[in-house]
Length: 198
Image (cartoon, rainbow, N blue to C red; front, side, top):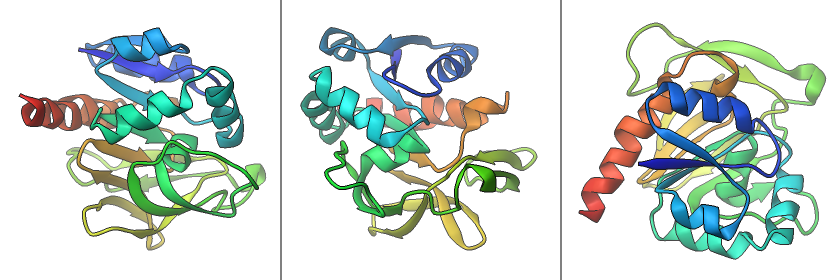
């Protein structure tokens, strides 16, 4: 299995390192040819408006939408969550996304850069100690469809969800050195999607 990391802007190298530590081949995705090579995709944290503009400039946005809609396992972290959300609150005028995840997400919901924080959270489906989550200008999920499962919350707000082959977190596990969420994506989300496609 080859897992791509959308490499237009953001925490690309950190995600590739985390995925590699999970024993999978991880590559940067910046072109249609690279996107066609991958079996699954991580959309990293960064600046969601910049990533969407670059995806448009690189001719990737329609292909990303099509692959996600077709069931490609996709994990969106922070800005990645924003980009795969079907509905956005506090979006910049004209901001484009890739869609696929039946949620309403509020950008910068926890505040600005100076309001960044860390929190120990329970993550459904992951055993062991609580996960140390890093929130940087983080969104939260205000509403979600019936097929969306909430995996983690902070102060009653959904900060991690799963829907079929889609996984999203409003925090940055790639910055912690704890690869359990990446392993969950590889071992659970991607495996389940492979069973469906078999």
